[in-house]
Image 1 (cartoon, rainbow over the protein chains, first blue to last red):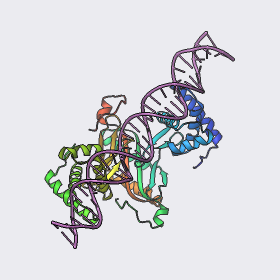
Image 2: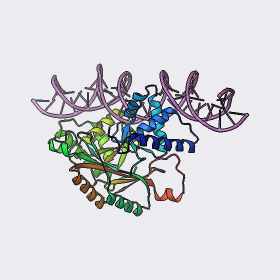
Image 3: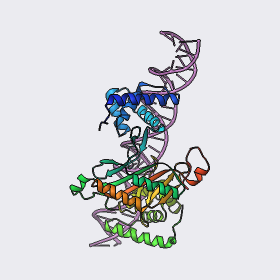
Image 4: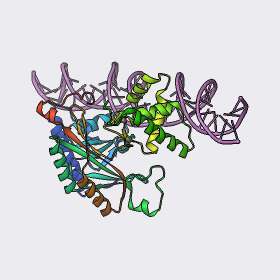
Length: 164
Length: 164
DNA sequence: TCGAAATTGAATTTAGATTTCAAAATGAGA
DNA sequence: TCTCATTTTGAAATCTAAATTCAATTTCGA
């Protein structure tokens, strides 16, 4: 798991304050479970429930995976997290608290996910929306294919073949 | 369910020939189940397994939903269909046999799906891929928000209703 | 037509996610 | 600080889409 640039103690106090504020806003209680789950979640980029649960369990094995589900759901409501569904598998939760929206290049061979931002694309998306009198609240752009490393390995696209 | 412009008899014979060809290529057998499922699938734009199963059952109630799953999976392998996951719910299968790739505007209120194509966006996607030495095989772009009608209704986000 | 091989459908299984509910924790007011 | 209504928790049960298993059936080349 990648670590963010700010030291984790800063992230920790920031995220705790953020969490506390949101909880108060909604008349909810600050439990140590929520605190730990949110802190660990906000420290990384994107994670599955399973993986976050595993991280949480390292610090406090008494916390159940259901609480992880529930807390992530809360974070989504408050737009600190966002659900993402790559394929039919597990849901991935993106940390959207501390950085701008980004899109993904997804390697169908090694499953590596590369993030990118492209202002031009966003601009044309807005144009499309205007053309249809549509109001965009969020978007998802995923480019699937082979990453640099997997192209070099000359892996022939195992099951899925060309399409673009 | 929308009907395509070509008369269904043309679609039927086209899809039958297409299916037959693909089956032969892969040494698979042409069963009347596969024929019916593929024909009904290729006649529309996008559909869930459940809905396609219901359509199939109208013509032949003896066909099981598992066969619909299996046949759609085959169609995906041959790129006549493409899996799509809007949210965490059921998988939607897109009919990609007869038309160019398109992207989607998705209304989070009424669940209406508007298709669009934008050459400029595709161009910049290619640029992004080049920058990362990535080879794109396919992509998914979904713009979520409120459609024209739902904006006008000044609706507050409630439960989402049926597909248009 | 025959028979090997593929396919089918029902039942079972898997896996992610949600619901239920009694017990425990939280926090606002005294 | 203490009390107690309210919220939250964790385990188990449940739900759902989808995959797997397997005996019976169908297909298709010889």
